[in-house]
Amino acid sequence: MLSEMQPNASKWRSSETPRRGSRRGASVFSRCVAIAMLTACAGAPVSSAHEHSAAETVTITDGQLLPAAEVSLPTFGTVVFRNARSEAVTIEVDRPLGVCSQCSTALGFVADGAQTVAKAIPAHGIASLCFHDAGRFGFVVRGAAGEQRGSIAVGGSR
Image (spheres, one colour):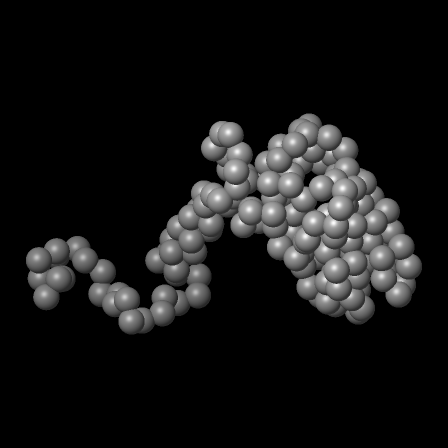
């Protein structure tokens, strides 16, 4: 009925799943990602509106932090920690959780005094943390395979 009123209407019905790689599926996915990015930190008590438009991934392996032990991102960026070890790890970041406790991009981290801690990130699991303020923040990854140290530089160029 709708296609009769709109001769160029698609034959796709909402009850059908778009094929992998289809334009409609990519468009729906793109819209979902855009909505998620626009609503990040919507509940955070900050004085001005902002977007989390940048993210860096730190991959934790048995031997090193990849791509490097130091990552850089702009203010309001997010760091995703990916545990590629076969064991659980903890991460301690040298800064209070603050307004990020209300942020939708903070996953797996809790406040622990002057630090922000992700406890027991399982093997092949992730945790993420947003950064609203410029500065350099050290972090430590601990697990049975040992300890790794790194830092996050916020406010500079990527």
